[in-house]
Length: 99
Image (cartoon, rainbow, N blue to C red; front, side):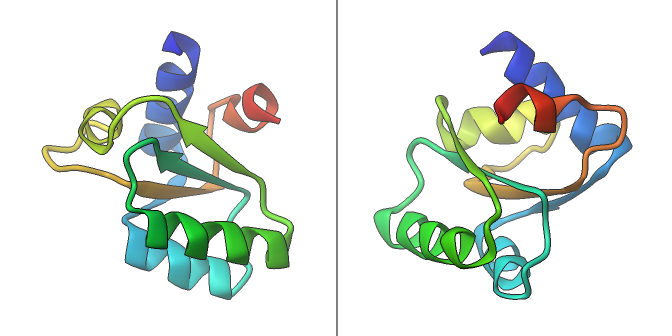
């Protein structure tokens, strides 16, 4: 999981990432994004929405093994992050690592 953590952090620092469930779902509705990452403890209704829209838009999703607190920490944020979308990975290899 350490490589995934590093890839997420590099994507947040050097690329374009949308943080948060509501904004992520809005982006998915528009078909934007290259990868969706969902924390393991994300509420079921949000997970169902994310799965529905990722299936419609053929955007891959990945379930992060840690909690939303841990995902927020990996992103370098002082708050929880239940869902994030990688719009542009920047220098990260996350798209190759998780596909």
